[in-house]
Image (cartoon, rainbow, N blue to C red; front, side, top):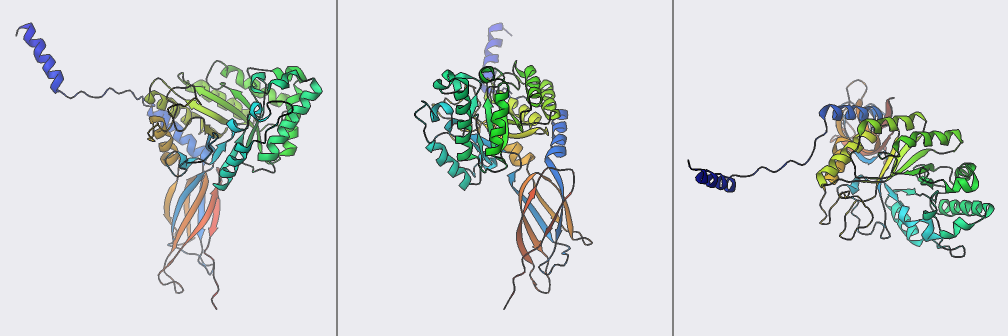
Length: 433
């Protein structure tokens, strides 16, 4: 066959033959996914025995129990802007898993107190905090002060030591009194930020200033979880310095509960070093919260792969105490993140590949919706549930007092544990005249 004719036929074949799409999404190794799932079962679930009684207090064998998870135990949320929860569909995919709202952008010290004689009342933060509480969301605050002078009001850097100390304590008082006192035990407060790259406060006042701030905040907000925040320290070149910086907290008697991380990740994540960092933090007795997280990549699929790798490494760790996403819904003029393809929802309102990862993990794989029947001997149903809050729907079999059976609902909180959680559920007995 002449060469020209061969080339012509080849070109025609390309035009009429469907072209398979190029696969751009990577897949995590199945063995490692299985190991991650096993770690989730070990650290994020609990065995539960549900004993069902009827209204008269007698065991109810054959009762059907539906356990539906309504809230994750792990704090999950996003960083609010000035619009707060206006127009945010909290029952929509991705959003429906959130139980926490961060006020980071609304309580920045530079904005709240730009001059010594001008302290603003943080009205936007108050409004958004009120919205969050109305909708049952916990608050996340901070960092209240920073080791980086560029993040504090300009006038603070010129203060003499005694006035600087007073300004720092006043800042802690102003925020904790408004948003964290008496506070929920689920409220997380990052007191000091940029604690790895900068040391300006400790240079000015000595290392004991951090201890003073934490002890002062513990008095003002005794129920809150207090944290030191580090920036870009989990996966970048600062990662090797993080364990020593966390160990120094204990050596300096800093009364912190958590290590909080502000992470913008757009380079390949190395799983093994990340796991070692998590183990080191856990061994030192601290929890870890991803206080503001963006994970991106050169393509949406690459970003999703990176995000799933991170979540499957961090969430199963016993050290993990929460994850807050910096960018959830992308906008055309979004400047909240410098990380490409980090959003979970695109400008058309559709889930991005990263959003589908979040929805699949927290909405399916790491969420419980279980059905069981109580056994004939103990009238009990044994379940293994992911930690969180549940609504139990119990359907009792027919009885003399209820020939058609009886259905009732019952609340249940399940913390992560290896010990069996015993729950005895029973409908109210309403007296009849």
